[in-house]
Image (cartoon, rainbow over all chains, first blue to last red; front, side, top):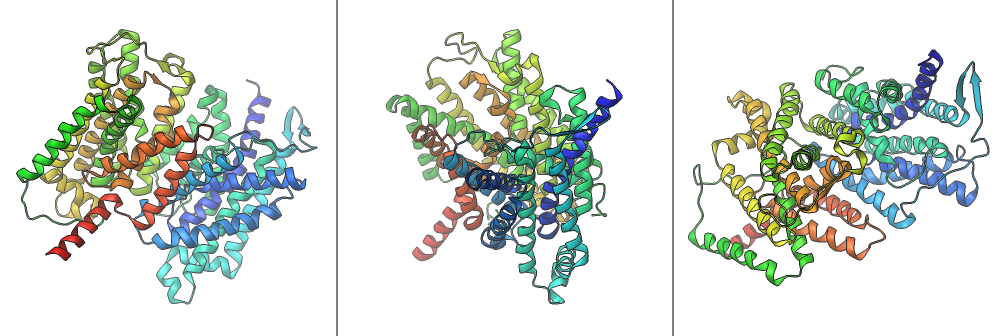
Length: 289
Length: 335
């Protein structure tokens, strides 16, 4: 096992980890503000992938340009999801919301099977096989673009959260909903806005992976479980934690691929996940519970 | 699930003789059913009973003790794999294999349970940790050649034999699952009003308050875990013997965990009849839509999703909650 090989593995993991980070940011935002574990996050990501695919197949839009379509669509889907389904039961016990999102996820995934068949679809770009080389380490342009897109969106979300009034309101509602209400923040509006942003993050991640990942109805399942691991690792509700957690899990996955047979490559990240859950359920970057 | 009508009767319970008579008649009628119904309906009945058994397993931990598990396929898979491997490699009767399955399932349950309950993990964290353990076993079973890897295990059919729990006909399975289901329902019904059952409810309603009042919450969560894991593992063994084939996805897969938990949730979590009612609604639905839309095998999952959303939004106590409400309303109007 040469040094280059290890470096290559780590780099691949890092690039994939950026995507995991972006998926997890959406999840962690939603959890942080509403305390809802969104099982439908993978399904939302899948919708993002299909939006990119259809924009590409019908309108011939470059997959990376199609974020101008996926972001508004997924934002709207997220807002409706929160307003009409989550909001009515926001005060019910935690697991009810989890089950609700699970139901939505089953529904969305299978209605897509019904409408567009379970076939794998591929988005082909002209720059599909472009690679850069640093020494012997190769970087696929697609994966690099996906990573940069994820970084960009993550940075925008982070800036919105820290620098704008909306972000302040979101953080306030997350920390102390009744206090936020007292100082005149429309918490209900913040809830659906946050859900919309979270869903849009999932959508962008879908767009980012569509050019090098097959598009099929249950694809989200792969990402959503990883995203849970990332969120727990980074600390539920912590945006920076989610992104760094994503990078860690991405690298753990690809390092795991070196040691374990193909189907078990996630074993390492699962073990990390279980250990974190057991010994530090607030995550690496979460405050005390 | 949230409201619980305290009953005047003290611990232990009985029913009036009229009710016993009705139950007896229904059970007796069920014994004639396999001879009057065509085999595909008998198959559906077997699946209803089987998923009621496992749903009841989930219900003890999730419905009564309030520890929401999202990975009961862990126990199902362990149960199915243990007895199957013992049968395939050593020729051990699945009846004995079932005991081992149950044991291994319980050990695993206690292990996971101890790890998580010791730190007071509950709610979504416990759900996720169960999911993670089930996924770990899923990955191992996909990659490990000795347990058949992704292809799964085929159980050789050696003809009808009670000792090997193998039958060419469906009827014996019908009776096995029927009586196991009755046993599981009876067990939970008796448990409900024992001190232990009440402790489960106390843990579910308010863990800290129960602890403060002197309930050893860790112990009772572990007891609930034991019963739950055991029942689900037994279900896994019977499932394997009935279908004669198991693979990683149908045993340890996430979808299987959902299949197990969705029935008690829709029927009414924390009620004796909840898993049965949920199974009565969902199992035939799944089987019939699978027949009706063969090319779109996922249609039943879409309907599952819609039903789940509807039930969570409008009937948080499931079908049992609805039935109770209607019953009390009727009684109020009459009396």
